[in-house]
Image (cartoon, rainbow, N blue to C red; front, side, top):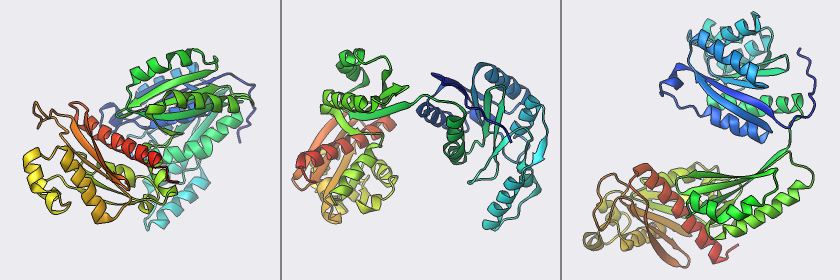
Length: 427
């Protein structure tokens, strides 16, 4: 058992994140672990000062890990704990900490139960994953086989976790973050977030420049842009007892300044915020998609419980489907083209009538990179919204990047719906 002494209060503990695996270096697998871990550490009051990726060569892994242990208070590793021969992390850590492997009986029992519950036999290769360095504290893996490992030497913490994201995330939330809070007297860090739409990051910066310059020094404002929206994160580092009310007032001021572009308060995704608005009003929505190809429906169905307020959709890509399924007049399509206000309106009204929903969204446009014309260049999109107070449609010109056009269309559709729900005054 490792004895833990609470260290005196520090304004900031430095951490490094190291992701391990050749598959990351060659781009076969995208590293999402380090960004998620950095966010969690920041929320806990730990400052991430470096992120690195290293391959499966033991000498390179050893060098990177040793350098990190010299520079930083906390080092977090993911990857290299699997059952195959290219998983070298345990051996490298044994060499660094000058220790051997021992069987962790609790891990072995958990692995046996894990395989038994799935009707599989625990192989010798998987059994070896229960061998852990004798200087570590084992971190249980409730979602897989490989345990995590916690090392504490000379005031430095090293944590090694599997590279499988959902296994790592459970270890971070259930074990690593609580243990770091117990090990170190971490500063209180508070974040509040607003989501804006319809205004570029640079324009937001200009709008908020004076307000931002007058913030107390322990407060910072971060701009987090993505296609179609910009999130504003107000952070307070080393927050005290009076900062809760101060943050609330600052967020009210910030919301007032960006009111024409404000979508939601809090860190919910747009589809989550829309779903909550519909749920509490006992309202429903349907979607008719052309240029977005089902993307809006996909976002909606990632929200748990969306079946309460989302009734369904039609991905009406072909003009004949627009006519036969949604009832769009073929003569309108021939005379005005599929990318037009009247077609968007008819699509929204058609799906709303067919599925009998409170609201409906329709999209039709030229996502690109081809298919544009001088009159309707790539990025031209019509979004229609139909609801209790009629149907409206707006034309947008987003640009020439196909994926970005699809994403921005989805978010602007959510904004139109959000604004209409708010303006309707329904509770």
